[in-house]
Amino acid sequence: MASTIHRASTTAPVNIAVIKYWGKRDPKLNLPTNSSLSVTLSQADLRTHTTASCSSSYPSSDSLILNGSSQDVSGARTQACFRELRALRKAIEDGDDSLPKLSTFPLKVVSENNFPTAAGLASSAAGFAALVRAIANLYELPSSPTELSRIARQGSGSACRSLFGGYVGWEQGSASDGSDSVAFQVAPAAHWPNMRALILVASAAKKDVSSTSGMQTTVATSSLFASRAAETVPRRMNEMQKAIQEKDFEAFGKVTMMDSNSFHATCLDTYPPIFYLNDTSRAAIKVVETINTAAGKIIAAYTFDAGPNAVIYYLEENEAKVAGLFKAALGEKDGWVGKRGDAIEANGEALEKA
Ligand code: DP6
Image 1 (cartoon, helix red, strand yellow):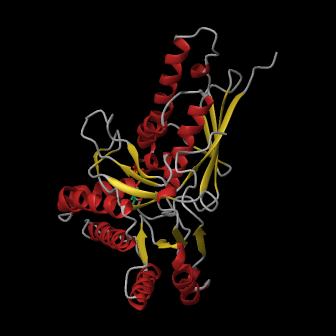
Image 2: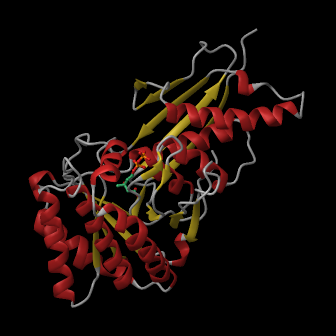
Image 3: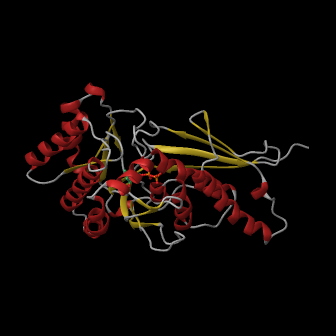
């Protein structure tokens, strides 16, 4: 008799930080040196779709296929996620003999992104969030998004924030086992639903310096880094949460741009220096300045992750002034492709269960 194949699917959104995570105090557990905050983007344009399955008939080792190509699952991060999820499933199986022993079966995970992988578009965030959620669904775990965020964090730090919709914080925590380093929802998407994100793909190439190695070198060599982690970010976390609560776009935009600048300044202050921004990125910064000067106030805010692609936040009522001007100024030339996240995650809560 053929063995049953157990299967579950989910999707996970990308999140783009407005207060950046950059630096680990514990590289093994992915514990950060500072808290961070992000906006979860619409899944219409940017999302990972993942199916997890398991069966006693599968070949003996776990496997992961991303965009059609086989990935190495032996890395410590993927292994940590598999191990934690299996342990939670095993605890349930131990208490109920009638359940199939899924925790003992090999896992097969198949994932697809609808955007360039590893180009500074937070693909690892959506990827690990979807992987953890898909396996949790497969194992029928009763875990909360908070608990899943603790597991996803071990796959990729920023992934913990993709377990929630809306405006999401990641508390750095202080416990040495990482139990309190989890994501939390600052506000649901419905609180401030007219937020928009324009994503400008300056380059879809894989980034030169991975976040993991870049931030390790920054922690080891940058003299700006210590004050960023100890003073600048804690202050900005408070300012940003207040701006979101009060739906104050000028404050939101100012802190977003200043934190992106601060993060890229510490990259430049790293030795050897890390350059994520390029001429196209700097052109985008100029366009945002022109838009804000013409408006007489901040109506557009740029931010850049570990790559040259710009994400521009703005409110829907300024669509013509912001997205329109970007289109006119940059169009499709110089390798720019405009993509707009229609809305932040509409359900405000976590991801759909498939
Ligand atoms: C610049 O989450 O990719 O996007 O934990 O090593 O996988 P690892 O790093 P990752 O770093 C993201 C860095 C960032 C800022 C942010 O998203 O907060």
